Amino acid sequence: MQRRQFLKGLSAAGVLCSLGLAGCALPAGPRRYLVGGGRRDGNRYVVQALNPDGSLRYELPLPARGHGMAAHPFLPLAVCHARRPGAYLALFNHEQGTLLQLRDADPERHYYGHGVFSADGRLLYTTEGVRSTSEGIIGVYKLEEEQLTKVDEFSGFGLGPHEICLLPDGNLVVGVGGVHTQGREPLNLDTMHPSLCYLKAANGDILEQRSLVDKHLSIRHLAVTHDGEVFTGQQYRGNPEDYPPLIVRHRRGQALQPLGGEPLDWARFNHYIASIAVTNDHIAATSPPGNCYGLWHRHSGELIRIAPLPDASGASASNGDIWLGSGMGGISQLNAQGEETRFYSPWQWDNHWSLIG
Image (cartoon, rainbow, N blue to C red; front, side):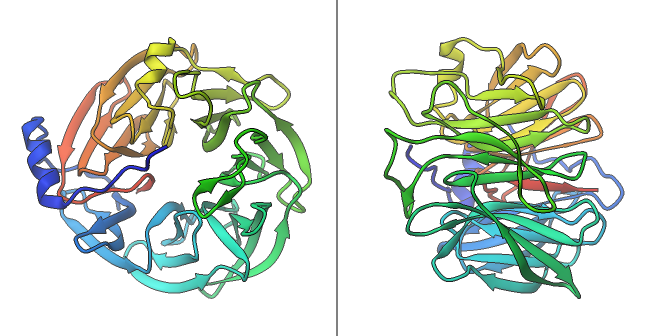
């Protein structure tokens, strides 16, 4: 799949204005702001935070493009993970935008772009890989005195893990892409074996592992509900003229179930789901190459609509609302009824972000 390209801020502003996106403030909340990766002119990569009034709270320079954000459960800390095959983790204060630690990947290893803190905030779990084989590794890091120290590793679950999430019971679920890569070039598309893998947080033991029938659906991005239901977003690596469902739902002990949509609906997403957000009533997912997002009923899985959103990227849920971002500066808020309000900022967003507060 051809990766999306960031556009320069002024060009993005012109396009969004032509689409009628208003320059409005974000609805305020206690300590509410958005934190995610972005890019500036001259290929400068940053972590950026947007205030409720739409102004830039801060930008924190990064050595290379960032990807997933892991926010601490109660401290004002977050980790930006480098885009795969990533070479760094950046621990920072997400209120002030101050860098606390920049950790290089271990020798012969790379980061796959995602991580999550334990419920008590003492540990960070990250998806990593062996460079020569793409063997999947979960790195376990202890947080102490605002520094991360690697204390353990889990392996034995497959190749190319991508997003990792915390389950309500404190264990972990991982989207295992199943693809061996050299850099970003896939090498094993004929033999790839993706899976959704549940791991015991204490020692990495596999609790359950599920695979889709179509092995060319690389499981990559996840969202987990408060009662333990998991939604997975896929990247399709098969026949480019086929358009299988790209999102499935799962509960432990049950089969994987695709969300609703006809092949022509799934074609809109151009074989890739970037981010997923779930509320009590809705599921939303973004597709940068499809320049759109989809919205589904949470309980029935029925497709409600597919709407245009240029370079659609991050997705977060809070208090029944869903927030969607764009690499061209747009922000869409979906309320509890699924109604959309669009805002504009000149700040370009990457695939993932976090809504703080």
